[in-house]
Image (cartoon, rainbow, N blue to C red; front, side):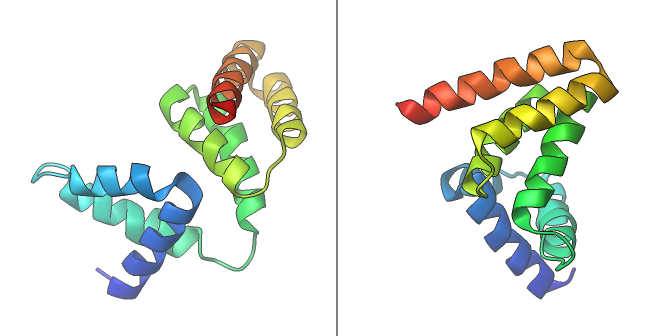
Length: 125
C-alpha cells in the first residue's frame, strides 16, 4: 500500500463526501471489508481523484452520469451531495441527468432526478 496515496485519498474523500460519512465508513470497517476501505482510499480517491487532469467538479459530474446509468442509487445519492460540495450547481446536475437519460435510458434519468430531489430537500433542512 502507498501510504501517501491512501492519506491523500482519505483527505479528498472526506472533503467530497463529508467527514462524518467517511469517518463512519472507515471506523465501521471490519476484518471482512477493511482492505476494501483501503483500496477505496488509495486507488479511487488517492490515485484517481488527486490526478491533475480534471477538476473535482468535472469528476463529480462524470460520476453522476455514470452512477445514474449504472443504476446505483445509494452511491448516486452520496455523489449528488459530493457534487454540491464540489461546486456543481443544481442546474448543472439537471443537465447531467438530462444527458444521461438520453444516452443511458429514461428510467435511469427518472431515478436520478428522484434521488437528486431527495438530496436537495435534505440540504434545505
